[in-house]
Image (cartoon, rainbow, N blue to C red; front, side, top):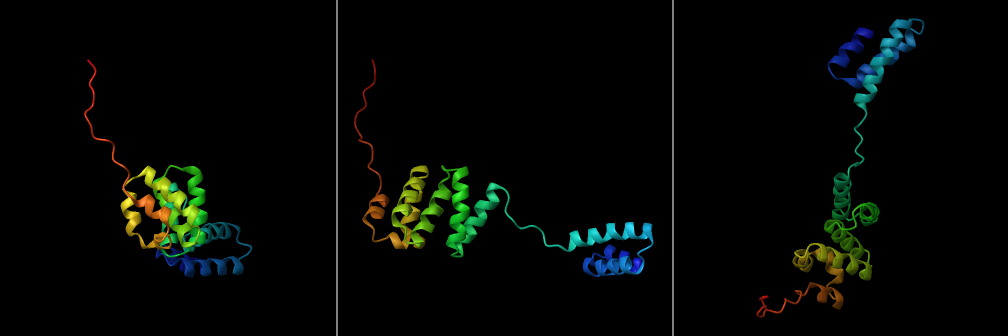
Length: 164
């Protein structure tokens, strides 16, 4: 039984090997050396058979998870992740833009506009994206939204004085 379990382990059939090692432990409770090795191999089987931890850990992984949540319409989950990320990097334009999307989708126009303004301040090219983004559609009839999308005034072009 131990040999069959060991062969299954070598062939990466972890579930089968684990069952065989469990049977060895049950059938030979007095074989101290055998039990020690069997428990080690059983732990290997359990570790290998368990699904990998998919919990995002790094900032980038958590931002990606938040983006996926928003894209699939899980706005509460996305908001929770984004709020946590915003505490770490409040000046991240991507986070601010996604917060604008989430708030818009939740009908929170004022908060959405504040996040969108911040995102555009951080990365002006987002102004164009926001104008065509269907996720911001709940804001399209909002005067403040339309004002925000207007091109910023250009600096006055004139003759500059040079110091003499």
